[in-house]
Image (tube, rainbow, N blue to C red):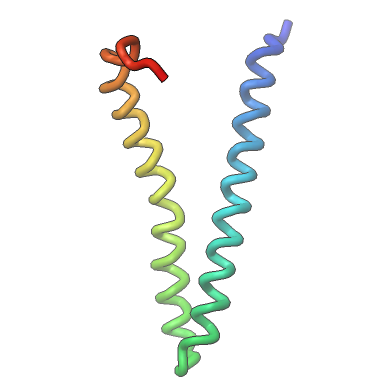
Length: 85
């Protein structure tokens, strides 16, 4: 038998990933349009250099944020019962 909670947990994670990736793609599109309007020399080399550098940071920033969150969770796990919101 399938565990319903496990299926719902996976479904929520998939939707979170889709929403985050959609938001990041809209951000990348807006920056690309703005950069295309500003740059005077429209050469393929400049476009590829910008696209590669921008995609590199778009890929690694969420990963770095996730790793920092995991580390922060381990630190706060020892004192979270003392913090009241």
